[in-house]
Length: 441
Ligand SMILES: Cc1ncc(COP(=O)(O)O)c(C=O)c1O
Image (cartoon, rainbow, N blue to C red):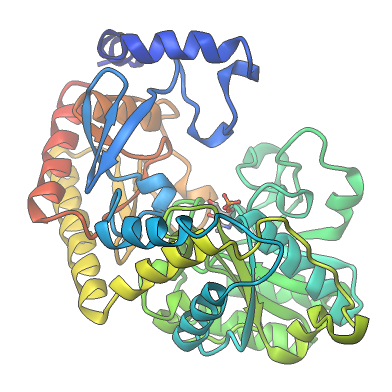
């Protein structure tokens, strides 16, 4: 089926959403407040979510493999989290001062992640990476940072570089050029951000050799999450650790997505200890959140005692008690058994999709780690951002809309996550729905 036909079916099922969207157009640019969630012809409006399902304004039920972009590891409205939120909210929503809840979540995080000696909270992953980058500059006295081509770290200027660049204007694969990912990113940013190729240790070594003395940090999403969940090659993260140490560069793991792959995140799974870590998504239990932390000697730049903070980090809603309680209730549910279940669901899904694609001889494959996965519409060996670009540029949209019409929600580029609200039958439903979508186009 063509995109147009999938759109036609979608619009026929989402009449009330269309009407709401028309109202939204009058008061928001393109009717939108969150670029990521928009898709043509218009997004459906969510009415409620429960467990693994969301229902839209027209009452259509969809099995949710998006999970608010991997945040909802327990599924929608899990009882223990909702109860924790209600209990805390009854006593006030936010205060001009700390509450015990933030200590308890900080304890839980520092226990799970040994490299996280101390931690601070923010309201988003964007603020977390913004602070980590500032901290790296402050503590090293160096001006530049390095990030990987294809990696997304939020929407502040310093990381809006080479997120989804057109390779034609992004330089050679082994020496990528910084490309602004948005209008309004100042040219100064492009002079201060060095772009690295994912999984090419020798090219990274050469770039770090050249730029090392002016680099404050190498910022790494250990799974290249939004770039397609492309796991690090064997030894790649360890090599980055060794190179950054050699050049006096701080290694920052952005675990906003990858934290969900193990009790202690990707750094536990791959056995590499960064200097700083940024967090978000699941640690807020579905509410707005971010956090950053790491080596105590570096984090002490924020120590405000006797007016001594060298970096100020305000934030009206930082560490607000409702988010902290939701996060704690979520992490309490993430036991070793829970991780084993998440891994098994992810493995089953990847196995099913792989068998399906082999059977149809499509140019497609599925990547992932643990409960995270991403569909790719290329048969190239997946190693980095460039190799994951679809051979048929329409395929991700066609599959996304096709799955919506089959009652399955994914992200537009094909990234998804299994949640603890799912069972094997849900994963099998995903594979069967994908089979039907592929069979018609
Ligand atoms: C790795 C990574 N870092 C940072 C962010 C930004 O987080 P937020 O959307 O909470 O600002 C994201 C969001 O998807 C992310 O995937």
